[in-house]
Length: 70
Image 1 (cartoon, rainbow, N blue to C red):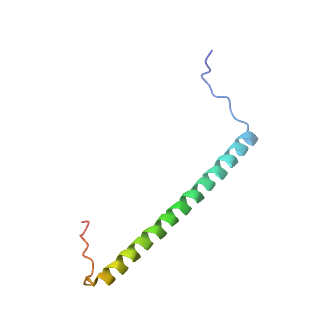
Image 2 (cartoon, rainbow, N blue to C red):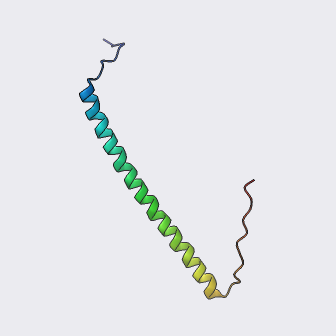
Image 3 (tube, one colour):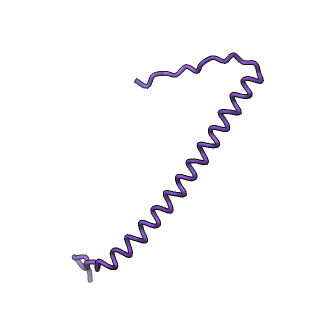
């Protein structure tokens, strides 16, 4: 037997479910933000190491040339 209509969720039950979903989403976002921050720190450290290596090698300090995206 198949039901064509959904059984309405009681407001209190819905609030509890949404509260749990929200807490889970916030926790997941916090972990994601922390991971991104860690990746940025790693990228910055790599760039700083590359600059130091360039200076130690005596390479000229040219300004980087960027291509326009337009």
